[in-house]
Amino acid sequence: MENREILKRTMLNKKVWAVVGATVKKDKYGYKVWKKLEENGYEAYPINPNYEEIDGKKCYSSLKALPQKPDVVNFIIPPEAILDILPTAKEIGVEYLWCQPGAANQKLVLEAERLGFNIAYNVCVLVELGE
Image (cartoon, rainbow, N blue to C red; front, side, top):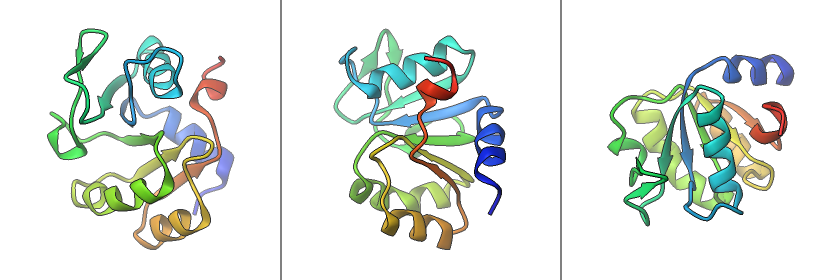
């Protein structure tokens, strides 16, 4: 496993991200994180089965529905829900997972590492990109 700081930098240098838990609610982190990635030049795909689009951009129902494989999957959902998505992420070849603060617990981290993912957790994209 890479050093946490190196891992964060590696992930932030990747330009195709999926944001699981994206939302149309502008006061929520699911919106703020997706928007911050967009504003910083990332190809950021919002994922939330409850929305057709967010700010005029197509919103996808799942990782499998994306038009390309994301380099990094950012999670803004509870750890229990993330556990259900790990097999799909592995199947499509995702290597990097980023869990916003509150989106990870020990069980999730251990399972992600067991499956071979590089996982950053308890780190905030907004902070890292200068919110």
